[in-house]
Image 1 (spheres, rainbow, N blue to C red):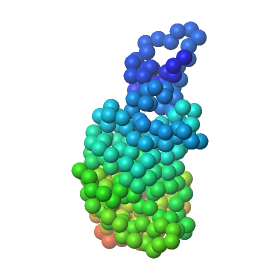
Image 2 (cartoon, rainbow, N blue to C red):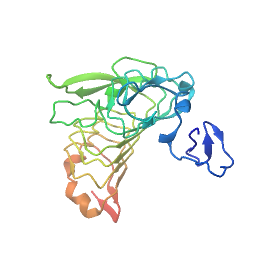
Image 3 (cartoon, one colour):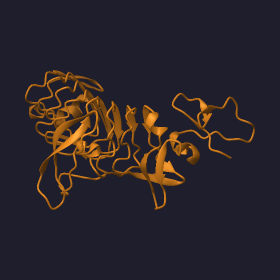
Image 4 (cartoon, rainbow, N blue to C red):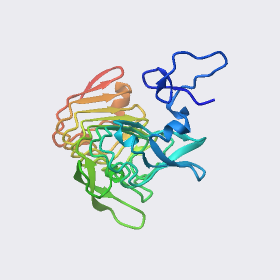
Length: 282
């Protein structure tokens, strides 16, 4: 029978039609991952001809939506990549959630000039990029180097195998205010540098915040740091001159093992870190 699921408001639906009751012998399947291929095809253009599935774009209907939740499964296959330009001209999209199944995002995938919120499973071109494996793509990479309506020029630093670190101008949506990164790994050096449009960042499962990761994010007001972080680089939050709220999900004792003054130099105004068991003055 067709797949049935529950949306974010917990109503049971079939496609977009609410289901008022379930007949004996029928099953309601919950969760975004279980949406029917027919329903997903109304929003996404997805290629599933290889081992895994790849999001190539949005349908005309998909481009009218404000919130896009990319599925982690399509037609029984894991959705593991997003094509360059997949979200071109999606001028209505304000929020994008990328699932942890995605391990590759091509340059310029999210050229959405009205984007306000994005949730990512990693930052860069591929999951697993590190500062030591000669591949380093900053946050701006997924928005690309071509100008588009709503994009603002941001200079960041990219390192690709076989070349030196280069300053690159990316165009990031000027409306982008909130970023969540749920990644079991470290944030690269200077990965969010100069992203002065961002107001809040939520980090989940991150293991380290490296050198100058958020340097120059002058609009950044709040950041949530998980207890999985065991190291923080110098100048990680340098010149974050609006930062007033820092929440650490671990204990005060854990915080004291990663904190040092050089993480927050050059004008950060905050004085307290809220931990799970109290507040630490810095």
